[in-house]
Amino acid sequence: MAMGLARPVCAQPPATRPARWRTLACAGVLAAPPLVSHAYLVTITGGTKSLYLQVGAGTMTGGNFNAGGTPGNNTTVNSVSVTVPAASLGAGTQAMTTNSAVTASPYDGYNFCSVPSQVYVGGFYRTPGAAGNATLSATSPASLTSAGGDTLPFSTISWVSGGNGDATATIPSGSFVGGTTQALLSIARNRWFESCLQFNYANTALVAAGTFTGRVTYTLTAP
Amino acid sequence: MSPVPVARPFRSAPRLLFAALLTFIGLGASQAATFRVDDSGTLVSQPVAPMRWKQLVPGRGADHSVEARLMVAVRLHLVPWLNQPVRLYMGLAPVHSDPVQASWRTQGRLLAGSVRSGARTLVYDGTVSTALLEETMELVLTTDGRALVSPQTLHFHFEIDAP
Image 1 (cartoon, each protein chain N blue to C red):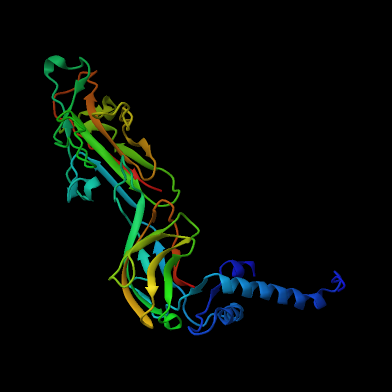
Image 2 (cartoon, rainbow over the protein chains, first blue to last red):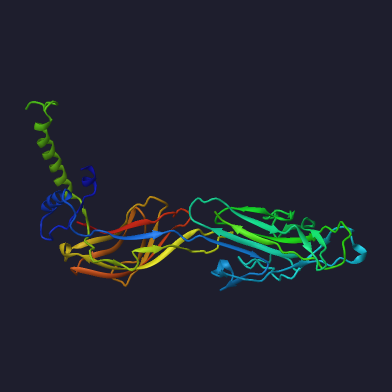
């Protein structure tokens, strides 16, 4: 009753009735079931989950992501390499270079990485709700191998993380464990992350001549 | 007149009801009343509207809102108010999660505007000149996508303040 007094919500009154009769009609209808529609309904559903990871080259169409660009698949597998001169064998860390040409953040075009020294790694995890964090991980084989069957432990490869303007790198610096999958970063939902990785070869041992190769796979996993 | 005995509720009830009714009539005669408008026949282009992230990629200036666009063919039955001055509002009932914002454009018979859940916005102010008002609205719904975990049904309605 108090609600009705404050703001009666009623059926339509006859246009010609005086206000007193209109109110009485209203009071009567309050107790009756509605006979006609007094609302239209729209059901909304949540935004879709999405996950994006770019290591080295990536694909975007329609400009940078913050300007409406849409990320796409890119099958390019970039490499990092170093040639150790015979005179330098076992003499300590050698910086590696990459064939990745990505310097600009795909998010906004910011000049973030330096090439050929750094590999861009970035992405995002988009989801509604209070889901847990996503995880960026790297899976590396135990060793790099040469055509002649010689090996180098993957743990001899490390990286220094950085990026222009980043006081603290998002992805921590580290080295590959080798033969396993290692977690690199826990990523909060609805955040963009990115870093530039400079890879190094430890070069602490004398190894047989040859070209040693191995592939690391980066994975972004969301709950 | 003797006081009404507390122990006689059944006999006193009619008096109280009569007093309440008198009060109700008095208020009704002196204040504008609000009436729900029959909008039967109103159609929405998508009864279920999937919300899309406004920014597919979150970032430094993160925008976490989601939105959906749909058309609404509005039909309002206004016979009771024909030739009367009214103020017509579109309202959006409160929702259980984060507030939902609805904004719309029209073809001109109703006013464009926006409303947040739990509120109403004026869409017409003037004399009713037609028994059936038809209008097409382009409705844009926006809310915080982080909070929209499960489907949410939005209840829109029209109501009139008549003098």
